[in-house]
Image (cartoon, rainbow, N blue to C red; front, side, top):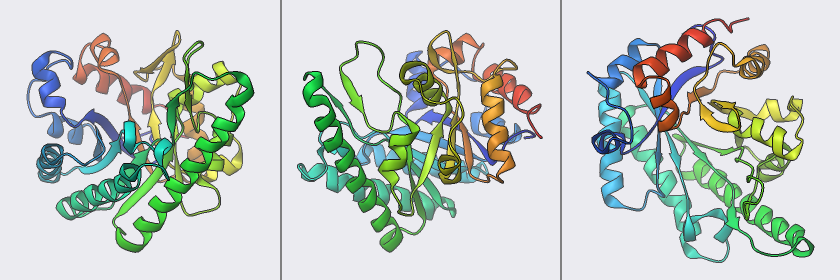
Length: 300
């Protein structure tokens, strides 16, 4: 697929077939995995839970096997909520056990597919109702826990799960009035999360653009950030709405991908769209075709 810096992938919820049956995700006629492979995609990235539910793990193994049969690799994007969230790291045993469950799921998929499996994870996120006086101290504590969580993730991946590549993702900044803290919602803070260890970064372009709007973040990331980018979640922000389909008018995304191309980026670039955006684009097939056509013109 011309124009991509790195291998192209497509994000789906692990239960996407059920979502189609419920009408959440638009229907697709034919074999979706075959269509994506023929369109030039190299892998599927599955959004899922904390990898602790056996039914979820069974579904993951089934979809991984279908991806292998269809010539596609697999990446994982576990959402760690509640006691599994890095916000609880050091206080709740579930947060520590989530490290092993996530890496174990990645290793199981790697054994099925025969390829290394990237695992994209968010740093700590937590609702916050305190005043401004205590906000900085609370944020500092969440940052500390996030750093410990990812340091443990990197250590265990290196020593016991060599077929898994964990990365820390740029978070979506809270909307005005939203009483929540998300660590790593600016690129500078995300650099603090990964520190000087061996972890890379997932550059979420939509979250990044929202941070430009909401935090005054620089429109162009620093070279030290770009050097650590190992994965990309590619989607646009249109009229303040995130996870919109890439189009010919996505000039800021084009410029970001060219920055990576100039640096020889060879990681994975995942198209990450909301079900609403896919439906608005005319369905899965039309959203993919529109994206491919736009991105094909981006090659330097």
